Image (cartoon, rainbow, N blue to C red; front, top):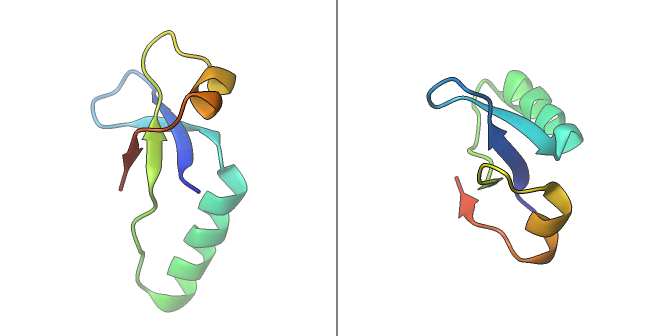
Length: 62
């Protein structure tokens, strides 16, 4: 399941809306292995709320 993220105002920078535990679990594994695998993300559009994004499908990236 992809992380749900939204732009935070900085170019190429996002904040996690849903999936924070998955992110930190993946980060912990990456720290142990010394290698990070990309995490799929669904990027929210401006003005979109999380429940609508979850109901109407995701635009997956990653």
